[in-house]
Length: 372
Image 1 (cartoon, rainbow, N blue to C red):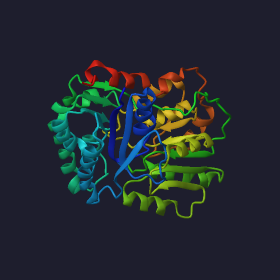
Image 2 (cartoon, rainbow, N blue to C red; image 1 turned 45 degrees about the vertical axis):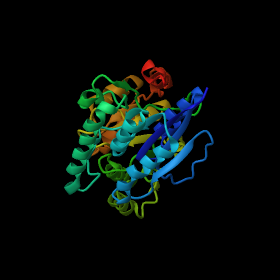
Image 3 (cartoon, rainbow, N blue to C red; image 1 turned 90 degrees about the vertical axis):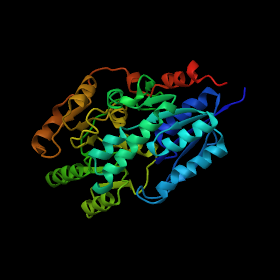
Image 4 (cartoon, rainbow, N blue to C red; image 1 turned 135 degrees about the horizontal axis):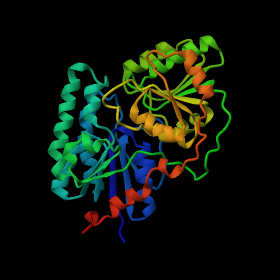
């Protein structure tokens, strides 16, 4: 049987992005029915994997004029690859994919990773004078193209209520963890001196609160250290991180200027004692369950969350996290909590933390997607 061609694409996510590459891409490859292409942002490290074909459609700052050329580059890629299925993971590519859908009739899936409209309006990712303009463009693109989208794949349950245009054409496929092996993690004794911040490095996600907290802890006890690993898309954030960590030998920054391979993040998780998730209160993140929560719980690393009913309800059954007001932390209370709380003392099923490959397979094997 001739393999069908699937093209998975994003503008700002690297070609080796875990959801595009390790989760969706790998699951489709294992079915043996698809030739998988992945298009995205250039990776810091060259990606070598003969199972997939990688295409770079952007390698520049997110506010560079080259970003506006990315949809044109992607359209040319589609003409060359001739995909039977296009999985779009960013609103930047919706309009050109809709045009291709009209002309060549591939299946069109929209993998909704974020509520991009809320992100733009409620975060500082872009300067104020263009933030609302970009938000309106994103929502307009989503509304204009929704009649042509065959299926929405949602990374968060809350998007069902937040995105009215999806109607009943959706599958919730939460962005859970996809481990490299089936070996279960055994809890280990921790000293709580090695702190960790992983993922997107941004003001909204509280990186500066994490730095401030560890500075205070280190002043009280020189054994406290912090590892920050991830990518900061905004030059202003990168510059401020460098400034605030300058001269702080106890704070190590990995990445910052480039997307970090996911395997390196997992390695740091396993070398650390406790992780910080100092998300500042924000409408765009309030109801989401960050992927790092699944990663931390799977690897049984305790973590600290900002008080949030959704996050507290999610972490409580695992006894995985304690809460802290990162904007005004009480150090004595914080230290007492981490040393007295019985982390991970309740047995739990790991399957609830793992990316649902079977559900993904059903999305592609459903009769709606039978190829002619």
